[in-house]
Length: 474
Image (cartoon, rainbow, N blue to C red; front, side, top):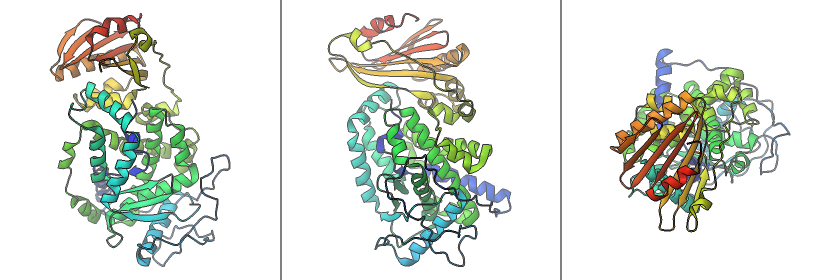
């Protein structure tokens, strides 16, 4: 099952939930240091290694905007600015200068130099919604399949429309975004009212412009289009790095209490409850867990270690959630499925074949259990394969074969899933190594053998014995 974040493309960034979490952390840091932070020395700008893929735009002399007397003193000044494209007519000159000052400060923190002046634009929330809908509708069929899987798992209600939920949620929450395919940097709002919150957002989005110029984010994303785990891990590295730079920017250059006040004026998070838990958690993952992952890289070797990670990116959400597994080179275990479609016969169609991954398993368990139980039961994930099939009369069949790091890890997941079924008021028939349960119109089968679990959810109980028979180990 593809990670939900991939459904609307890599361009849509930053939402209120994450803003509040980051700003709260900033406030705590400011209070612990007496209300002020000491700027850390900026790393030296790094040059673009020729071995990396080139950006889709021509190479030009790095753009370094003009500075004023109150510009960041750590701004690199040894480069000669090149002529920049004419700014968008709707951006006043005074605001354009402020944007350039923000950019210079971000460059000083991150240590990457842009290859050209970004195309800066302001966009209304109505225009944002139109763009989001266009992006989502391009993948309407895949979103519909994901909706059916999430409904089978109990993460969506049968009457909920995943596409509409995603468009609505992102329209409400997105404050800015960087479009990798065009190189445009957008702020949602009006150019005549540039607030501290807009500055906070712009600092985040400008990091993406720097990342894209150095590492070609569009090519990295496209290379992982058919690998949802690797795609989610890439987004965590990208967003986690931008979040850390944004946080340091705010500590060094912003009034944190005023920023918190502006965030508070957004109206709080009570309205988040109308969005399913799985959407909220999927959106937060690259910012919060990605931030923690990138921080582990920084602790290991500073920003050069982060740059080096783009040449050897994590390939699973497990490696993001447990950085020590990335450093140890712990790859996912191989898992293979029998030909279930052929065994079921005419009329059955494969709609999805993918990996569920540790993150999705954690979210599923966390939706019904405590976070502590969800973390413990998902942390031993080793690898899995997921198949989702449709029968001739619209029957649904979800089969997940998983390998765990140890037999104990498999047992922890097995026990947690049984508890989940009980929380869902399922009619559970449990034996030592096998569970059958019914929730509404769905039949659940869970079996365990050694370090493996076989997990089936279907609306056609008649196929259960046939499918289980294809897995002789169970």
